[in-house]
Image (cartoon, rainbow over all chains, first blue to last red; front, side, top):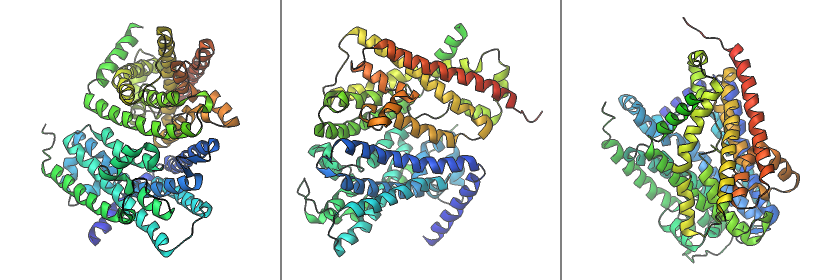
Length: 267
Length: 262
């Protein structure tokens, strides 16, 4: 484990040095990531310029959901997002090269193209979390304060697992990257909003089938002191790390199965 | 002219080879249509006639714009041309007896033609299965919409051609691609429809070239814009300006190009 972290940092550092060879691009990318995040947030402000509540939730509450989702996605994307390029590696035959090296392919693809620009999403969302917390009129208890890091960690874990699942699916369908986007980027999109606005059926699906509700929705209900529209037991509010762990096991199984059955392009 | 038709036809065939990729992408486009519709429904639930749209308009807008993502390349970015500039292959292209901009325009229209069916139809069908969408009321509206989409494709190409040429100076297109993505997403109305933009921001956004990409075709489709002359003049005007700027920049870039090696 320690060795894996050491190799991860070594490879990530190497990619950062490579990115620094194009300083103009690096600065533009960092800035655009940050601006993109603010424009996303501006969209929410535009929505709230027309209505004080969206699906019963106030602006600071939606900002809280937006920020907690955004931080989880950003951390997962920074550390692991490039695994979605697996299909490209299979198609170009470069996965074979990765397999010849004495480091696991997951580690190599995850660090690929590691670039400080990816921080561009993390900083604005962190700022937004602070702003939303200042505007939320919450009665802070120890349990509430402890739920916040728990939900962020659980959220990162869930998105890590989803990204690896999205990659593993490309062992089966090499050109399937874009379809997998609907759970990774789609997951990032829906968790920005109160899930209840998508209707009860969608909410059930996002709890039991694709458990995105545990990224931030369930724990946020507890932090914001709101009742669960589905009336689920209180235990669910704190289940994010557990859900993340289960998904991680599934993702690891899927990845290993895919890798074991990988037969190269054969030409 | 026949040559360009050939280029477009071959581009269409080339892109139609990757059917699984197109299917996979259109699946995600459709899923996002539902998610965006969910958000807009919540907003129009609170404000039933916001921006002159009703809920049906807003839902139709979600799926229609998802359908137009690939035909007008709403995510911006550059053409495959950038890779040829970076590798120096462009020097061969410049020696061909074809106009560089014309070649890539034909290639892009071929791509867009395939995308119109492979990526355009499924999101609308998917949306129509669940919601009742607002369809054009007459064949004339369909025709007007087709014209508006064609002009949107030209504007889109004009923007992306300019972005591609920056590689002559920057040698790497990732930075400008990023900028192009966010300006295009935000000012096209993809994140929030332009009709919802407040005050001066809304006025400015309606004048920028990105308004020609999806907002105008969508308004024609929904029958909210019947002043076709204005719509076409706006879209055609921007297409002309951008294509002319592309020609100028091509000439400058030609003088700038240094081919290494022997």
